[in-house]
Image (tube, rainbow, N blue to C red; front, side, top):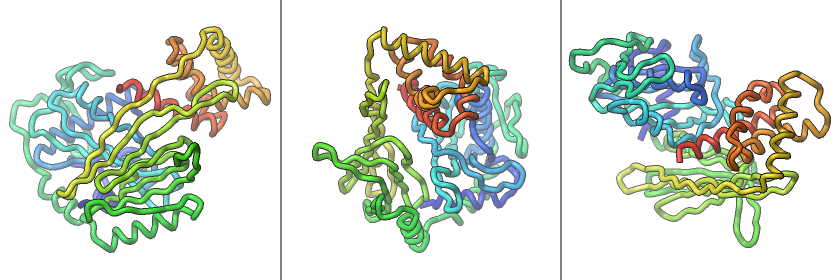
Length: 378
């Protein structure tokens, strides 16, 4: 079993990107240009490594390879994007890897590309790249080439050696459990469970009881063997269920208007462990958007637009405006989900100014974008 934290350190020890790994300060998958560049790198790494895994490390400084971290990214449907745009798509896995020195909520993203030993090409146009384009790695650069020879295996031996040195052991696992327990105070009730005599999973969260059921907020779940953070949330409430074979999380989102809020189930994610020393993630989308009267929605939508104009014109905000700003993104989303198609465009226009204005509002924006991304995939 590979310790992903050690694997990242081993990859970064090579200093510069090369034909089997790339490093990024961050990914921008919300924009068409960002998606196109990401797909280009996936295509190039897959074609340049037909016999071995290749990797992209996210959250690393491009210059000195220092680990800076990025936000936790829980997009389990990234493979859908790969399949939609690439011919002979590789299997792509995005994992959130914990590093002790990073701030709470920050991780390093590890993208693992498992090749098909076939030529991977763009299936259709995206941004400035044309359908049918084939990319390869030329050192640290992904370039387009006309391809008329067989795929060449040049990296499998060195990558195998790197992965061998990143294998986990009992000491690293125990150190990981102790570190997790120490990072979470008693209020969050850190716990652990061993699955199938192989996997050590730790979790922590702030528990509250309601109608005989336990709900958790500030939830952190980590698979210690690989230092993979499986789930992280500072706000949303979740239910946790487990048995001898699985650990499941049902995530809820808080939505509403004018201080009248309810929790709606968003997604159920189950981590299934088998006797062969492997696990898989199974997800079920549960979200049904709440319905509201059009008169109320028109009032909310117009109020949001007025607040948005103030932000774009850098006008001063009242106390009520500042309070409404914190709910701007989720209320725009509710308008969009109830038929106000242009609400999403309005929200996208305000992304930059929201980030500048308020950390709380920006967190609400990121949470909203995550929900919208999940809705889009389903």
